[in-house]
Image (tube, rainbow, N blue to C red):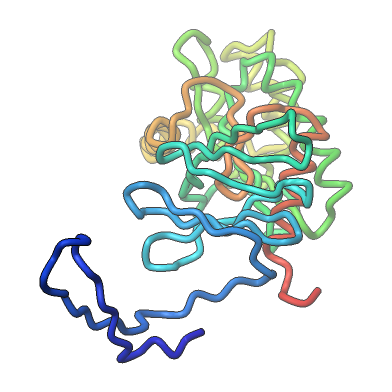
Length: 281
């Protein structure tokens, strides 16, 4: 099928044309796919190539054939149709069902220097943009701890600050967290702050820092370091750049989390582990 190099294709331009245009076709490249192909579809602008495999995965390539990700859709999907740039229609074996997917790009989130919980070399990274006075954020602490326990060695959690202006002491708490990180006790203070999210003020934050076992003289010096405020500003800017508007905002290997449930996030983790698994395993 690849003996097209040098093949001459003859196109007859119209049934009444008295001439023919001869085009020279050559093989540009060969695109590798990990599984047997069921269907190939391309967006109208040619910017994305979708490959539906027999095992029920949609592999996404850019116009040059570079992998952009993969989506598990299941073996019951028998056809795909691009609908604009970021939507995909899926045809199911069930003739009365047509599914519509919204595709989102993976966010590139800088994590250098950020607090990490779990195996630092884990293949799946959950980044959370958090506010220490946010009640919804406080409820996420146990959820992430459970995921870390159940996916030991496979998942790590990276914390990013996103204090909201509506919360009076959230920014002060964020700076306190970064000061605690300098003493290697970020997660200890993190848990104490969220356990008291509805009772934070300057005095309470200092009490919790002391309870966390921090060197209070160093802690107070670090609170005054303008570098911590700059780091908070940088993390807020990074969040806004990828569409964060509220908290908690979670991303699994750059994929935005829409349902903050164990089942939904666990499925995203499983998808990532399958995507990253060596071929043939």
